[in-house]
Length: 233
Ligand code: DHB
Ligand code: MG
Figure (tube, rainbow, N blue to C red):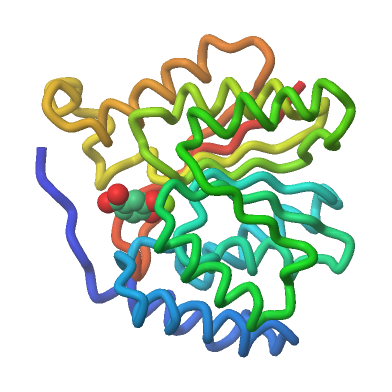
């Protein structure tokens, strides 16, 4: 299978669209700080793009989300985008790496969002069951939107946990399910965990009667990948 790498047109379109559709927002400076801060902090350049972050924020507005759960904080860029969508929105975000958590918390503090974004340290596979207990005990509200963007091999586990902490009408978005087209490569999945995780979550979602889903391929400055969008029935 051919590997699709950076195409100048994709970056040019992102630049064009960003220039025109991204309106001045009170969180612009905070988002720029977060992007620089995660570069300076040595984090990998794998955060969502600006246009993708805005897409996520708009999803929150569309469903009037109040409680967002994110698996995979990285430097807090997407968490700040979520929080920027409404002053009534709270983000709970899970990060496995203590350094990334510290980098994210610096950006969140700079954005003055510490009261609305909570970063929990630990592997999603351990933190999510604890969160679920809190939700089941009535100590925490169910989540309106869940963004799964962490270790890809656990995608399907995270999706299951997310469904159990969602209400009817909640939205779950899984990042990186296309893997530059390799998701369609069954053999690639034998040796690459990211491809396996992408395939498993699509296959699992298709069999799950609790959700309705689609997969959207995306290109742009972050190359060729895609989201899975799920509606919780
Ligand atoms: C990787 C992870 C991501 O969440 C992403 O958006 C892009 C790449 C990675 O692990 O390579
Ligand atoms: Mg991602």
